[in-house]
Length: 235
Ligand code: URA
Image (cartoon, rainbow, N blue to C red; front, side, top):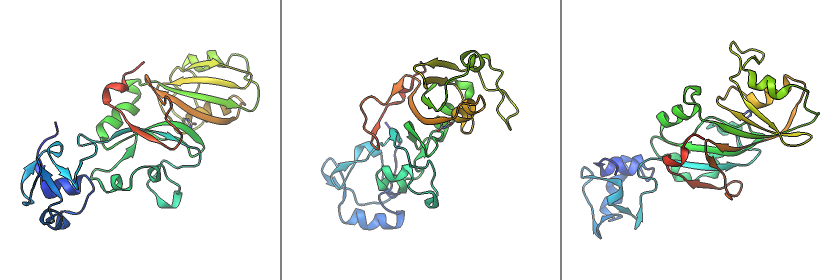
């Protein structure tokens, strides 16, 4: 159960209206508890205990969803980079405070599993190499894989141009002539594309299929669904 907060704070925290506008929402009887309208903006309530326009507050404990990111969308809040992954989420979420952020990023040309939360600490935990949450990538390349690639990626000795530290050991499974699955425990900038490109093997398609034990299942491209923190167990 979330903690109690003032009704005007609740309405602005969850993106319904500003604290100033809350007075109008309350006097119009739009917020009810057990069928009774609540009128005082300084009354403290838990988000789970009220209905707003007859509906429960969405994600009262904080946002945690997985999004099946399509190619072509940027992981950014900058409108100049549109279309944005946030365009695929309910507009009201953008007015929540704190608002949604992606847990790490996928390139515009990468598809797949992306986590969205409003919990900065959770995002940090999931992206920090210290916590070793494994990410699985399905990779397609344009030229045959060079000999020894699996061993090189596993060795922890590959240092990408411009990086001070070598990549952490990564498991590579060659699944076809030009396809492979790569398991990473970190997320350097454009890491997968750079790892393959450094060995003369440009990536032509990239899809993230899992984070820890969490997979997209049959979630269609462009759609999101709520998940629980318990689903984010490491593999
Ligand atoms: N590595 C990349 O190169 N791109 C991504 O989007 C994710 C990992």
